[in-house]
Length: 293
Image (cartoon, rainbow, N blue to C red; front, top):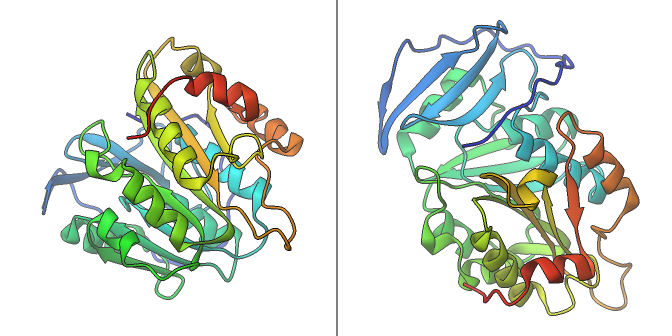
């Protein structure tokens, strides 16, 4: 389950009328969805899918992010990618991250994919999401969606897909990582929400999988990283970790974004709940003898 931190909102212009929200659970293709108002903050809601908090939104501030792993993902993108982006979101839910990038990066084009067709229809109605081509929603399996994407299409691919509290097994494989690599432009970024518990065996195996797909030099070149709160990295509790991988650029082009950037480290430490990034030899020690999935 994702945690959220209480960061004060920064209001952004929005001309959308207030949506009509449902009272109680609503049937969707995979079970139920429910919009639960935050009793402490007017205009903020949590979208629960099958009882699991899946998105937290401030309806008046499309740039607001509450879940800590989303703040970490946004920090990585801010440190590595400038201007408008072309992004693919595997796992849509309430599109909190897509709303922020649409508001913060005018001119961006995004596609959010969710296996639940009815949910994609409802969240657009409930949350007044940006319209196409700024944000398109598609009902599809995440692996099929990325496999069918054109080569070199995206600046950023985000994987945030869960069934209950875990990612479906077919999405954590080397085959999916290879498909993501192919659909990223050179220098493009893959961000993964990995929920794990001590001793963090899933995170280690997923990093080994990304290292195999993105190249043996990815960790040493600062193209592979792990972002999380120190308590999670030390194996003290269950939580969300962000895995980040960058597609290499050809040798005759400028270098790819470097996750060893001091600016990224400072930004992560300044979040409401401070986080850190592991790269290079430190990351290789964390992965250890883990094998690709």
